Structure formats: C-alpha cells, structure tokens
Image (cartoon, rainbow, N blue to C red; front, side, top):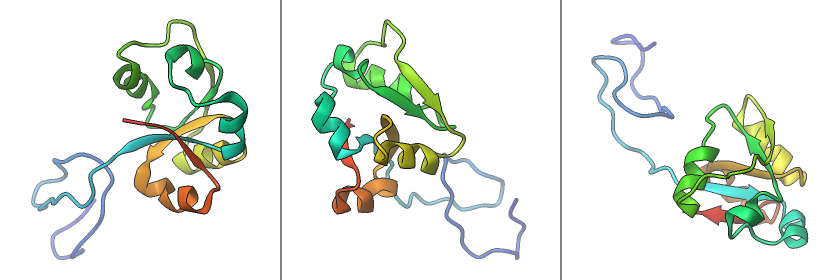
Length: 126
C-alpha cells in the first residue's frame, strides 16, 4: 500500500480506483491476445472457430481471461470442455505457449518482443 510522501510514481496493472489519495492516469490500453508457438500454429492451424479452438490446450493464468475472450471472439462459449492447464503466473503460461504446449492469453505489451523475435505467434486477437 502506498503512503503519502513515500512514493512519487508507480505503474500498476489493474483497474482504477485504487487507494484514496492516488491520482491514476491510464498508461497503456490493454489488448489481450492469444499466442502460441509458431510450430504449433502451423501444425493445428489458426483457431478461427470454436470447434478449431477445441483442438488446442488452453493455458490459463490467475487472470482467467479465457471465458470472456472466447465469448467476445466467437459470440458463444465453448460447449464441450477444452483441455486446460492452469498456472499461477502469466509468465509461466507464456513460457508454456512458447514451448508448444497450447494457447496462452496475455497483454499484447507483455508478448510484443517475443512476437517480433518469432518465439511466439499471434493466434487470435480481438
């Protein structure tokens, strides 16, 4: 927790409002994207439908964005459960995606360098 006089500036991930007496300004707009290893996307093809998405293992982090992401991307939830693996940190889900274990959701800003380097490929965005 911040205390008056203790910190001049901080970058936080989340939604305002934060603690009282803090002036919050938007730094970056979040854009959630689905990423995978380029090899996995080449093998399975892009997940352009709910049915195609079900061929992938969905890699979850503590934010659990998948249900909302799927609903927004396809205007319907997955009817049959996909294979799911859960991680307690986003970086672990991203590492698993780069290793070819499935699709991970992350903020575009977190994976931009990996996408540019070809370590990850963009599978879906909305």
